[in-house]
Image (tube, rainbow, N blue to C red; front, side, top):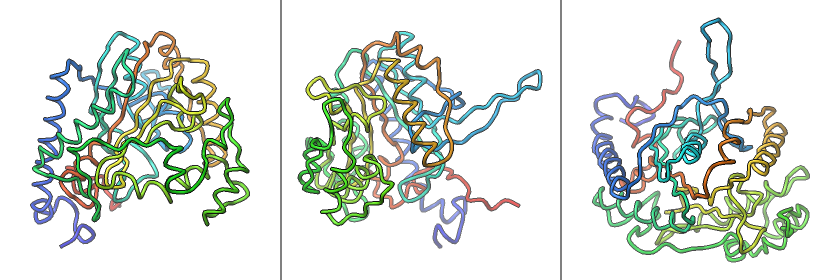
Length: 352
C-alpha cells in the first residue's frame, strides 16, 4: 500500500503515519512551552487579509467577502501572518509568536504543501542575531522531542546539537560557484545583470535574454549552493543582497546587503529571518517594484495593505523570523514527504 494508491485516511496508511503525527503534536507542545518560558505571547492572525503579501513569486488563494448589503470585497488567504504580527508590534506587543495555518498556491511536492503551518516570532528592540540563537534552540528541541540525534532528509544529515555554520551570500557564491556576487551590486543596491550573466555562463548554467539579475541569482543559489547547505550541521546563510530582501532593512555594515538570513539543514530551507524594515515609504517602493515584476511574470498583482504601511510608521525596531513547522517535523522524524507529517493533507481533486 502506498500514498499514490490510497488516500491518507485509509486505516492502513493512517496507522503508518500516526507515530509521526503524534511526534508532531509533541514538538508543537514543546515549541509553545519554549516560547512561554521566555515571555513570548501567542497570537492568532486572521487568515483572511486584504493583501496576501507583495513578493513577486508568492502566489495566493483568492476569495471574496459578501457584505450584508450584497456588495463584494476581494480577500486573500494569507501566505504568512507577517503583516498581522507587525501590526501587533505597532500596537505594543514586544514578543509575539504565532503558529498559523498559511496558504500558498502553485506549491505542492515533497517539501511543499498548499496549506502548511508557519511559526513566526518577533523580538522588539533586539538584533536579528538573537533569532539565530532561537532557531538553533528550536532545531535541538525538535530533535530531542523526536528522540533523534540527527536531522535527516533523503540521505542527508545534520547535527542539530552543534553550532550552525554562518555563511554570507557573498562567501557562498565564492565557495560554491566561484562568482564575485558583490561585484555585481552597486553601493546603492542596484544590480548589474550583464556582469552576473557573464559569470553564470562560465559556470555552465543556462542564461536567457530575458533573465533578470534576480533570475540569475536564484538559479545559482538553487542549482549550485543550496545542495551544499546544512550538511553535517545547520547553516545560517546571511547578508542577502538588498534587492532580495523586500521586507528587511539594509545592513549598517554594507548597504549592498540586508539583515536577512535563512536557516538550512540537510539541504532544506527551514526559516527566513529579517532585521525588519520600518520605513513605510521605502517599503511601498519595494512592494510596487515587486508587483511590477509579478505582473511581468504571472500577469497579476496583489493590492498593497495600506494599514500595514501605516503601522510600519509606528512599529518599533524589531527582528522577526518565519519557520516551516512541517519541514522541521519532517527532518526530526526522518519522514520523506511533507504530507507524511500533516494530519489531513489537502485533497488532490477527486470531486465530481
